Amino acid sequence: MTEGLTWTVYDADTMTQSEIYGEVLCRLGEENPRIVGLSADLANSTKIGKFGKKFPDRFFNVGIAEQNLFGVAAGLAKTGLIPFVSTMAAFTAMRGAEQVRTDICYQNLNCKIIATHAGTSFGSAGTTHHCTEDLAIMRSFANMTVIAPADGIETAKAVKACVDYPGPVYIRIGRGFEPKFYENEEYDFQIGKAIEVNPGTDITLICCGVTVLQAAEAAKFLKENDDLSVRVLNMHTIKPLDEEAVMAAVTDTRRIITFEDHTILGGLGSAVADVIAASGKGCAFSKVGIPDCYCIVGYPEDLCSHYKLDTDGIIDKVREVMKMDFEEADDWEDEV
Amino acid sequence: MPVTDQEIKVLHEKACQLRKDIIDITYWAGGAHIGGAMSMVEILILLYYKYMKIDPKNPTWKERDRMVLSKGHGGVGYAPLLARKGYFDFQDLKEFNKFKSPFGMHLDSLKVKGVDVSTGSLGHGLPMAVGMSLGARVQKQSWLTYCILGDGECNEGSIWEAAMAASHFKLTNLITFVDRNRLMIDGTTEEIMGLEPFVDKWKAFGFVVKEVDGHNFTALADAIESAQKETKAPVVIIANTFKGKGVDFMENNVKWHYGGLDTDLVEKAKASVDRMYEQAINLKK
Ligand SMILES: Cc1ncc(C[n+]2csc(CCOP(=O)(O)OP(=O)(O)O)c2C)c(N)n1
Ligand SMILES: [Mg+2]
Image (tube, rainbow over all chains, first blue to last red):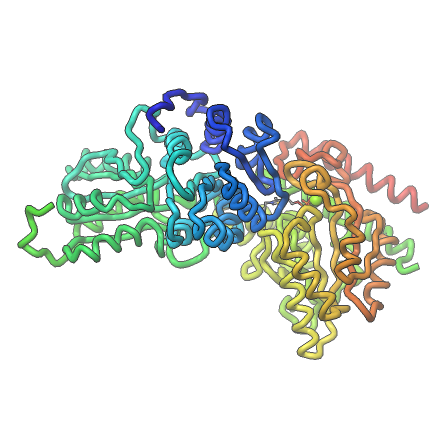
């Protein structure tokens, strides 16, 4: 259980999300002999190679063959082992999609997929290596749990938590060099439970991954300059979604914006929208992410500001949504 | 002799220039897939300067020969070649990998003139090349489709699915190369996922196989010309190469799959490429 894991074996100031993942997995491997690792010629880039060096007998590099990768992982899980599988997000969520869905999720197997280079984090590589669809794809697979940690520290928390979490889990992380948000692991992380990183009553920003830090900064700025009380939720688990936190935001703030390094179709924003729509309650709402297009080329910081996912973009968006009209019903004011 | 000594001299010059261009772009971009770009230089140069029926002024000319760079991470080697052929200005490549640039590391066929298909996710090129070869057949066109695979890329099942289709459909208008540099990212092809007996595998899939020195223009030209004459089965040319070829500190070094260069290394790399060129020219004399 997560409570038992109080160690840290990494330095979040100097290490990337994937480096932290590699270290944490090594430690987990010592504790749990059922953990095995797999990659597809990206052992070094994804840092699962660290586990491979430490446990060569429990690690399999299947070459550049992602469909086989996830099929083999499914087979290993069938024998009672806990496979951790790592390649780039694009080759996980798209090339390996049917194996992930039919071999792993359909059979509800205990596979943990840690996909790197997600979103626009490998921005200069071009569209083939961008992965702005994975949350939507993975979220649509029954039995799958989908997590987008805010930074390296939270990657460690998520990786530790997923070991004992039943069934398939998909964790998406960046290429490296994403700025850190958390100072240390001393906070409560539970799969499926949103974290309020800033309290607020005027508007709620629901975020995952790299946008959590940006939104928290924006909230600070808006408090000081616009006297706005901005709630920021770190919605690290996209599935199962913390519907209670979403509904509390609807009731308390009546204005919600989602921010994600992902297409606005089908990801975090859509998951939140589903909850709001089903509730039948009025709420000003907007989704920010990559619009329905293939992301342009560039470094992730530049892309982040281009697509208005940085602090400035978030501030502008909040000001815009504060002016938005919506149908206010007067009979549910004090519910929830 | 399919290529004259005079031609070979020019080809060496072009190859030397392309290698230096790759070094410059890697420097400008802050990093690129330089190793695999260097290993396929001779294949690209020979195709584009001697064999391919193309018109850089008219990149979408219907009857042109097609190129599918299935190992799409070789974009840093392919883009400068297209620039030197006149598809666009070489100076545009200063923007390679940069914000809002048309040139990502993996080239986009909708943004870069001369690029017939967008590649970069390994294992996609050969299936598309099979489709383009079938497209020529259906439309009674005589263009050829050339496809360049990485050897690590041949781990992908889709390559063998396409190979099966190419021989099933007897695609003699498709000429496939494998840049057999024996390296991928995590190590050598044989230690990560053994490909050998590689020639036998292609034969078993119904291909005519030519195995040649992939840095030798004469050997490559022989193979290409006999492939063009082949009437029964698709041909694969397994080009034995060295990753990082031409730059002594990169050659056959797995660390140089992807890397960046500072000005010092740029000078060293170019000096090494010059030495390679001089050696090649002297050998010819
Ligand atoms: C489907 C897919 N999986 C993984 C990658 C990441 N990747 C890029 S290049 C490469 C190694 C390619 O090796 P090889 O085909 O031998 O090319 P070369 O040695 O010529 O560079 C890998 C694994 C990718 N681009 N596409
Ligand atoms: Mg290779």
